[in-house]
Length: 338
Image (cartoon, rainbow, N blue to C red; front, side, top):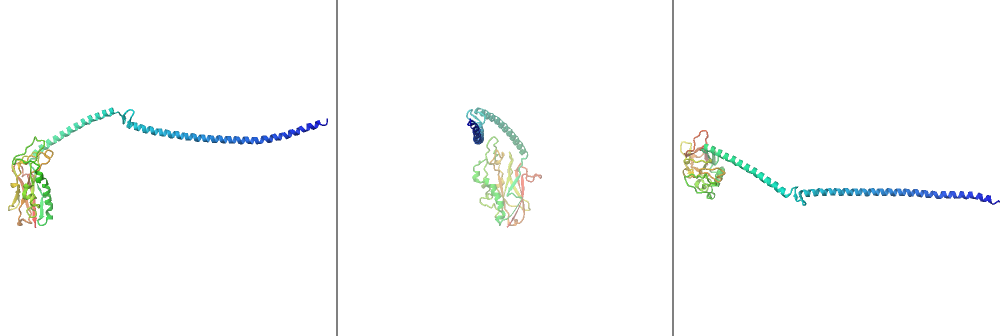
């Protein structure tokens, strides 16, 4: 009887001891679970970040691939535009298309070229006819001299004083050198060299040596050194001119007494064989005839200005027109000192 209450009192004590033990075991487990949850969250976040990085890398790769594809497409499109091997097109057109275009432009520009040439030829022909008519009205040519000066003054003892006159004469006669003139034709003396129907006009010889003492060959100073200068006279070119009669050059000094002169060729003749002249285009190598006059001054003539007038005479060419003092004549002054 006495033992039973003791048993009953012990049970509550056991229950009391068991409850704290359960609480102690449950507390660490909860903390561990929380830590595990946190780690799982962190791991998930890491995974998400990794996924984002992978996605970004993939996006970049895709973007780069897209750019490369675009570049490739552009290159391919340019290459295909220049030459497309699939269609055989060059610059966007086939060979047949290019052939048709070239044929069209060939015909078109050929037509334009023919029209242009026709009109240019027509204008040139009209101008030539007008020029010929104009030259026919002005039938008398002017005269010019070399050295090219209205007043020729020099000291015969000083070569430097007259070397520029000599240079002008040598320059004029270069095209008249015998070696050059031998290529030209020997024409009939005293007869016109008419060649209207000849496509290529022949040129008559006028050799430099014909001027003899005034040719610059035996005397390179043209007489200036001895105080007896040579003056070369030539007639201006006139297309189609045929002077009638027997033209020649005659010079006179405007003073009380006559001045002695020598003419080369003899008598100052301008032979008819050098006429007519057919123009620069038809007659490119033409040389007009020359007349040289050697002024035979004496010591009494030195230091005195001498006025000389030369005219073309013996023909129908005019030399007395007061309105034009160079038509068929020329006047110059010479003064020699020593």
